[in-house]
Image (cartoon, rainbow, N blue to C red; front, side):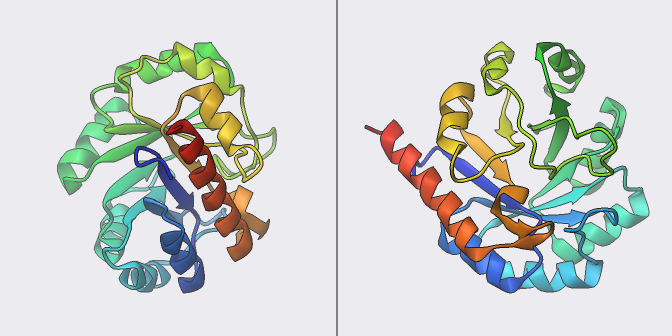
Length: 221
């Protein structure tokens, strides 16, 4: 695997999936705190999962418009390395949460065309990182994890010094193409390694990480 390629597997809910993610060389694991999601975990579950992972991988706590009290509980349970914000968080809210928890923030934006990058500009230098996902299908209750891709080539319009993870519709069959067309050096997957909504498939996790390894090796010549 390219040493520069970071890989986040999101929406984990079992010790077995965490072990597979770590064994395959992923850099980050995501735990989701959003009750409408089939990947939602309780604070009690999250604490046990976080303890199982230990310091073997970076832990990302994913929330959607969570209030301070809920975020306090999440941070206490998980002791995350990063907070991922999927909601309608303002620049001021991001600054406030960075100060409150002294943790890096990854802000998520849904993308379909170049014009969507306009809303990102004011967060540059405030959020520590971005995650770009496809816009959810009409009628979806989920802001992410919908298995939908966008045109990866529009990432050329983003300034090269903006750190981000690429997400949306990725799986073992297309991740190398996504990396090639976008120029990304970090990817995030959730539904692309599931046998059904919210159910991680160990074989699909292994295949995705192996694919990342293969395209990383190709990049290194």
